Length: 381
Image 1 (cartoon, rainbow, N blue to C red):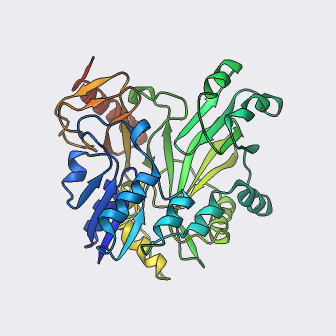
Image 2 (cartoon, rainbow, N blue to C red):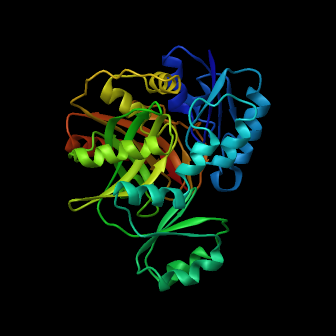
Image 3 (cartoon, rainbow, N blue to C red):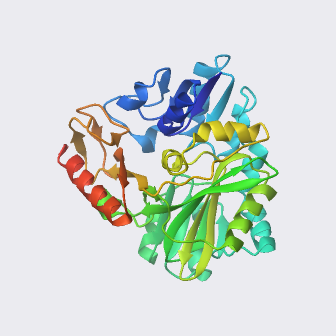
């Protein structure tokens, strides 16, 4: 069977599919060396040596390229980051492809705050105070309802708003919908959940890495990666509520729930109805192929071995702290590798890297060491 893998970054999903024995066609944004090496690769990045995510990337462009390159050539598609949570994009794709995973109706429900709020309230799942706004014209009214700091969430951009000055800068953004949430300090985490539609299992709880300075994060909420396992327990009650939420939303396959641990309380943040960025780490932790299990779920059944690694493994994304020109980044553990000489703009991702360690402390040491190694191969200008 041939699978189309579509997403902002599709490499890890494509690698998992290939390990499971499937042929792959990849439609993505970044023209990284190790993604191109996977074969049957198509990118919307116009200049291989000058990525410009903010001006070039859109889900509409991915949909168009997928139709142009994959239509009639794959048996179905898997949706990764940047597109799997966009119900409008999913709706367009399902007209032409078999979508192995959630259809547009299920994605729309999962990303509708009104629907989510009703289910969260009924299930007794805590969440921060949240409101939907429809344009930047509503920004001035937010301080009347939320105390500083609060969080503004857009599809490709999350930020903590700490003052009226921060709020004024956001007026330059154009958007048709955004979420405003009360700020909840704590430990950011996620759950990787498999669902057949009638049954669900939590594969792992994962620690999210947000705003890591060693990785040149531009803001407190910049997603910099993760590691598995989380390192602390989650009550059986919360686990059952998370599984119930996934099932009540009608989600199938691999899905993720982001949450925050604040003191002894767990606060739901959002749900991602697609294969998550944690795929390779969860596979190592549980000794499974997640694409294979995802497909099993969409066919109505799945078996998960009761095994867990005692290692801490995860992925980190290293960002440019200014405009940089990269050197040779084909070094051990580094992935999403730009071509030597590529110019990366400030705050955009340079590459990612994996760390496998015996403990959390060793994981962070490895993260710092690898960050320094990558930084030494980036020339600022």
